[in-house]
Amino acid sequence: MTTPNTSNASGVANSAGACDTLIRQALVVDGSGGDPAVADVAIADGRIAAIGTLDGWQAKQVIDGSGKVLSPGFIDVHTHDDTNVIRMPDMFPKLSQGVTTVVVGNCGISASPVTLRGDPPDPMNLLGQSAAFSYPTFASYVAAIDAAQPSVNVAALVGHTALRSNHMDRLDRAASDAEITGMRDQLTEALEHGALGLSTGLAYGNAINAPTEEVLALAEPLAEYGAMYATHLRSEFADILDAMDEAFHIGKHSRVPVVISHLKCAGVENWGRSSEVLAALEQAEKHQHVGCDCYPYTASSSTLDLKQVTDTYPIQVTWSEPHPEQGGKLLSDIAAAWQVDLTEAARRLIPAGAVYHCMADDDVNRILSHPATVIGSDGLPNDPLPHPRLWGAFPRVLGYYSREQKLFSLAAAVRKMTGLSAQRFGLHERGLVKTGYWADLVLFDAATIRDAATFTDPMQPAHGIDAVWVNGVLSYRGDDKKATGERAGRFLARQRIQAEDTAPA
Image 1 (cartoon, rainbow, N blue to C red):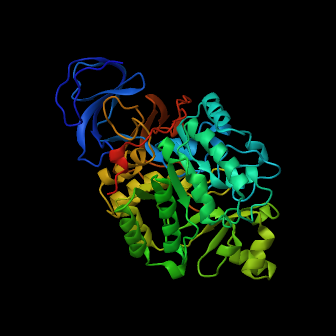
Image 2: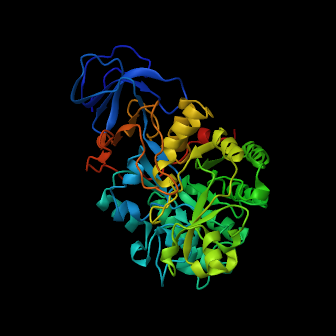
Image 3: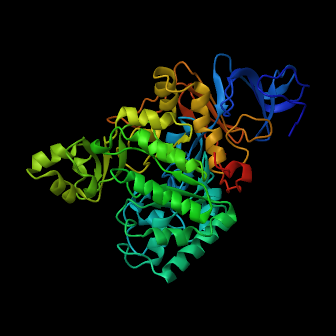
């Protein structure tokens, strides 16, 4: 790689060099939250070779970035792409919106290490049918990613529910000491092969009977590997503060950072509590390293859960195994047609998926804009009628929330999707437009970028994305909204967080 005397985005002339790609005169928003500056950026051997005024440089490909923004590739910290990065390695829903790295294994469900004895338990069925789970060890999963070479980078958490399914005959009880030992052994193998850490989904029926003590014991190996703990809280409804306290206790006991997944105030009775919830987060920040992710919508999506059935907000059924013809309809309309109540209709539809319009705009705005929040889509790629966040989350942050609603600046929005995300999840040399870092980059039009996906027509690529590079390889062109066919993604092993990164704020 050519490594001349380089400067930052506000730098002046550098000595001439040679590179693979030269992006000229783009407005560089570098992912740090700092002020944007117009600069040239050179890519060589997959990395950023130079930033500044690069007059005289020679390049195999020159891109005119005038009037456009160049930022780090977006990091989707909360996905359920576990099996899709292997089965559908083009990853077009993510690549087309500027995502260059996905974090899988969230909400306690992961593709590995998994050994099924039948159908995948709910909500692991969100990741695919039983044939999609063929990775009994984490090492075999890493090897499968390397062989598939997806178009985006992949980093992975290990799911608590997946581990429970491997070692327990029933999931409606606490694990025994012997079962916890078996789970810990598998978690340790995964950590040795680069897993980010442990995730839980304690709100789900197949994990809710796991007591705090089970998770405490399972999480104990994390600190040795510089790993982390991410959690779909035990409750996002009335008991959310107690659930947050549980998460902070687990993190403090295991001496690792905590990320609260898709932080929200769900349910009408919970609307308006975001200030209280964020105050609890800030209090915990004084004593330990905590943060959260959030998706930019007021509707959630998961499996159809009887505990969440209500008439206080709309619930849209997205799929149903026994009644596939009901996909796309409101639960209330299905119940009316069947002349039964909502709960009975849901019971007949299960296993099924649903979108829950369960949040208030003010709460989403407050959580999204909080300094501790990074962005995750929580998209469900195997849903036949997916929540639009699968295709549109990141452009929506830039177009709707930053440009139109002015919730935060462009630089702040980009940091929430790049630099802060890479730091929090231990993704080494990612998330910044910085000399020597990997060239995961997005060129976009700040004036036109927006999400096109809707709840009724969700599979739509975003507007305003001009080009996407993954590890220095041009992977998406926005002029025709098509992938180039070049797939340059790779598995990203976790790097240990440095002491200064984990110090309490």
